[in-house]
Length: 264
Image (cartoon, rainbow, N blue to C red; front, top):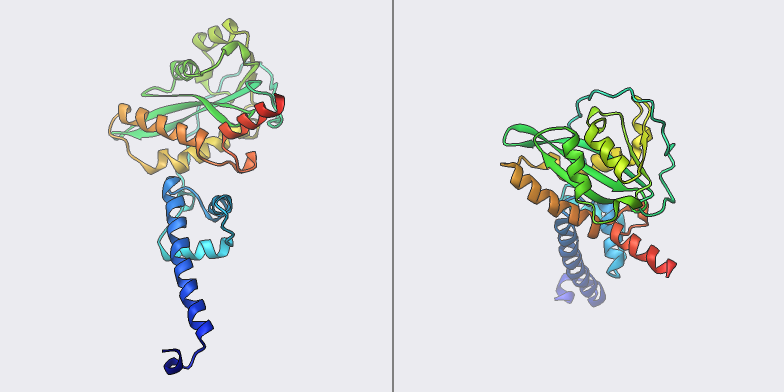
């Protein structure tokens, strides 16, 4: 056959081998993309392939993704959130945009966002540990109020006395006797962003941008129960499977585990 086509045997077998390798690589890229909820782009897929011992350029990964119609959710236009009322409490900003090198549970940050449920707006609250960016508490409900925040705290699988600082923006849902009672009971220091300054709560803002892109903006939930179930599944994936560039491409749980090993 090579003589008829006037090509060398080495060229023929090289092309055959390349096609086989490309087919295998394509299957790997599709698998990683699907396993991670269609959220990973070329950078994170490259990292996962490297973890499997496969060195592939982002350019090649991008080409294979385009050829197979793999479009990351991060390319989808995002819906802009509505402005929310703020409280005028004199509480200072204790975090002062120092979001890195924090101890476990030293600073917990929070925010709320909206999610479409059966044609109506419902809300989600999440609590994030700055130590490893782990979502340690979460809740979903029909009202954007203090009880939603309280329910998120109730999910924390740790001693609330170990939390040093609770930092949020100036949303009115964080200014309530319920929350103030919780803060006082567990001797947690309160910290507030400056009014109209999202950079003071940048980690929570960035986490919710990820949350909206990867989760809430992709679905219309039929019921609050469905949202709650899917939210729990997403948080599990976010903490245990999703790699984070700010953590050196580790998951929050892996980062915490490694930190504990260093202490021991």
